[in-house]
Image (spheres, rainbow, N blue to C red):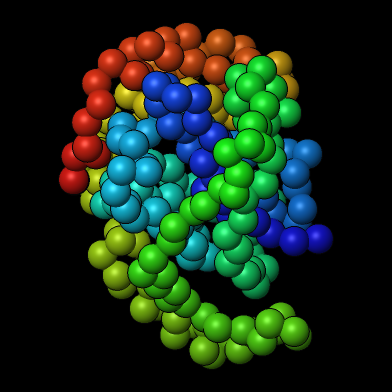
Length: 222
């Protein structure tokens, strides 16, 4: 079994807002997918933006530019569902139109192929492991973790938490935490916020998608 952290662009219909999805899987737990989806407040094809995933032994934080959009705090109850194995980085383009675009309403039009994604300025920080043996060095990884934990992007300040709350209030369109149809029992890492929960159906989908799309603006820096 493998661990996995994802940032996925879910395709686009001309004139509509782009959406991005975050996934967290531990021990191959795809049957217990911890997905969240958000509208992007900008066109990602117009200019480059920075998309980041911070992993530490205690928490995972997803960033868009300088704004945290999701935080997963490790708990004992998560057990093996918290990703903790060595991972590799992949960039792929694949057809998820059976579900990603309005639950399969819009399919990929292959007459527009080839499809191109441009990536630049990749930065990796952390503990390097042997790609074949997938075995780490405890001492080296301890030093790498200390370095990460001391970095500014690992610190969740009050300003960052406020920025994350604003982003999620404006742009989150689905959360597994509020999908009681799929998961009648809440996950241990779900921080249920009643005021936030009231904005979602039992399917986990937002009740107010138009409100999330009203203003196209750049993400405010915390």
